[in-house]
Image 1 (cartoon, rainbow, N blue to C red):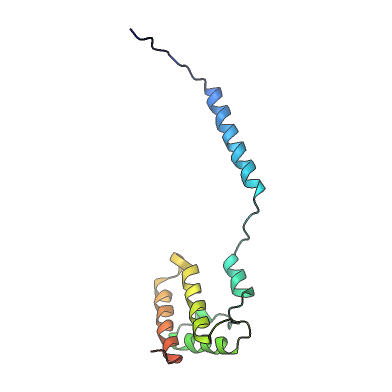
Image 2 (image 1 turned 90 degrees about the horizontal axis):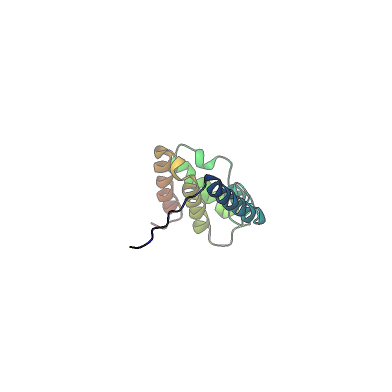
Amino acid sequence: MAHVRKTTHSRKTGARNTARRKASTTRKRSNRRAAPKRWSQRVTQESDALDLKRGVFKLKDPGKIAPSLKRSAEHSSRRKTGAYRSALSMLTFYINRAGKTLPKTQRTRLERAKVELKRAFGKE
């Protein structure tokens, strides 16, 4: 007959191991630099994208959003690509960063602004 060995585990040992694991993960994290908060805000302000008019994405009319983006793109000295591409990328960037928190009505409005932007640049 095979000998069955009973093992007894102390709660203290398990607690010690858990504490050790937590301490090791804490140490690992503390060595890394924390990611800066609000990187998307920093991108909007400091990147070589566009000098946007304040509150342009909050406008109610897609027909007003598109010309504002077009004007900003054409007058911007920071953009690295064509005006249409810069304007469209900033609009897409805003929509993507807002994610699920963007109300459906505003998302629809901004998607319509993309169509208006295409029309404004004669890309239709």
